[in-house]
Image 1 (cartoon, rainbow, N blue to C red):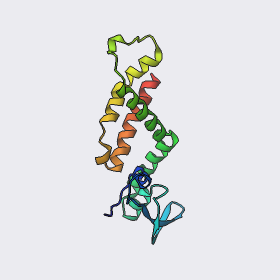
Image 2 (cartoon, helix red, strand yellow; image 1 turned 60 degrees about the vertical axis):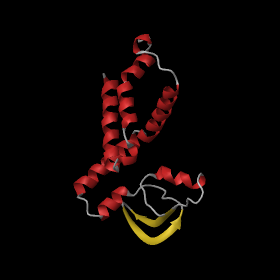
Image 3 (cartoon, rainbow, N blue to C red; image 1 turned 90 degrees about the vertical axis):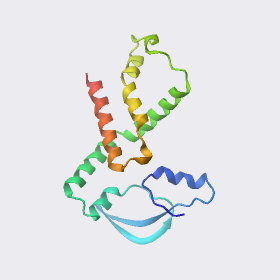
Image 4 (cartoon, one colour; image 1 turned 120 degrees about the vertical axis):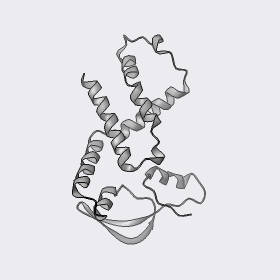
Length: 154
């Protein structure tokens, strides 16, 4: 079976499952552009070329520019690391018995912040990442990040 994906995490399956092998198309970067070298090489892609491929496909410059802004925001804010950290915390929280909200001592700032952001964590956990288009995933991240930023400002 042969399939292509933009989920780079799937490349990790090669070492964990029999008969799973990663291959990708060799790419040469030229500034912000890429050239497909029409050569299949062993291994997974070292990074995403979604914006460059969209540009090659003729997606309007306005959309390309917005995508670059979003990627820059995500990179600047280390959002990937934050989400991975939150996912680990949420996983840990799910395995423990949760106290009722009225049992939580709200005078402790860290506990208060956890309760305050619980709806954002819940929303994040309800996202169906396997069925989400990459641009929709970026939009979800952008919206959740803005919610957190607005809460921490006030």
